[in-house]
Length: 192
Image (tube, rainbow, N blue to C red):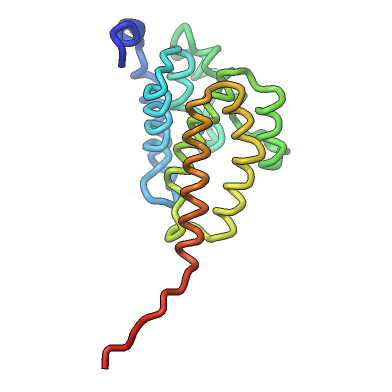
């Protein structure tokens, strides 16, 4: 982190958002752990890419809250601090709406999402792909996740951050290689 980035973040108050995100502790992930840790991973990815926008970082820690914790109150998010309304708007951009299919959801972000929504979705998907392993997920689920990433998230990254694009493409390649490797049958020699 550069000094100017540290200085921009020095006065950021994120604790109330972290407290709100603790509701995600009860939401398990297939890879183990919980959505609370995934939120931190998404925040870390954004900081790793030198994002210091306060609204973006606050939204990253609660980006799955509305989808995963059904009793989440919009008014409580708005009231957290002076950024609450903007944070809520960004979170809602990356929240799948009730009637939307996964494809419609990703298409909406690609075609109508703000640049910050696309950056947040890219960081979220980097975290998800990092956790996508063939010993945990079904082969078809991995193939579908890779396909939707190529179709919808890669174009987002092309628009907003070439370095995120390179990481997404690398993760896709590695996950495809993992699939190939995991389906190989290695001949075993008998020791008689």
